Length: 328
Image (cartoon, rainbow, N blue to C red; front, side):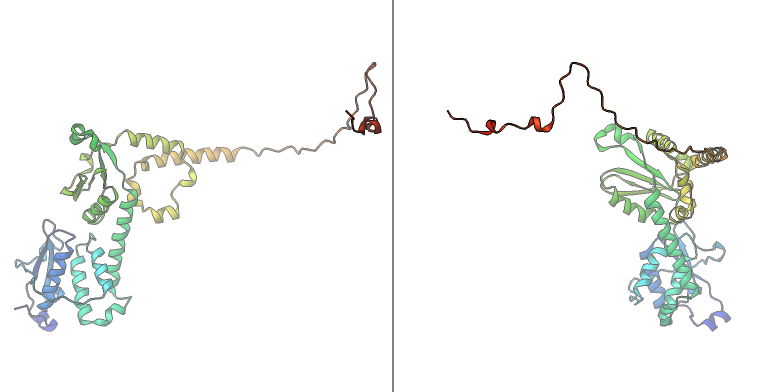
């Protein structure tokens, strides 16, 4: 039997919160099963506390001692398709209130069908902002993750398999599982590992393996290829490439700080500004006007003494006798 779901009764007789434990911070399937079970029992969103294994997602002071198991045979709930897509992205957000927010939206969509047509609803706008932040972070990882090669033990034993490509990133949200699947499709022919403080993923060429998180200090050091890239970047640096509004929009400041060339931007920019200031401080160079000179008349060279006189065109013409056919 479910808990009392009447709001007035719940205010007069406060009930202990139910604890719903999910298997990981991005457990979408577990959230869907739990939400269907809670909705079938008419349990109000305010009566539920959401947690994850190994990562509490709500204030531990309000965590109840009672645990709730979602009914596996709870009927499916009809919701707008856009709400499913919203949950797929928003559930990966780092905000610990995301599960309660999504269940509250589900409850309201069932009991308030007109909610889907209200673009200014507070809960809906907050969930959309969470989903957009997750999508922006996913785009940053796809575009700005930098791998460098490491000659691990597997490479030393089997060099034909290629080196291990390692990248250390610090995503703001829980994206390692989703992005690991993306990179497994993108770089299916090479071995790689993505290390994050929360969790790590490794692709051996056939399947994905997940492990504990790694600190930045424990990540492998950059290889010689990164040093060559930094040298090339310094030689081809242009002040016009300094971060502007368009660059800040396409490349947020947080992932930009993690790029290897980020530490070189300030000295390169200072040198460029000093060079530009020195050039602008120089007096203007006055260009001399070039006046075209008239061409001199062509002089006919005199004939040296003893040279044959020049013949006219009439003298070059053949005689009429020379034009008669020869008779053999």
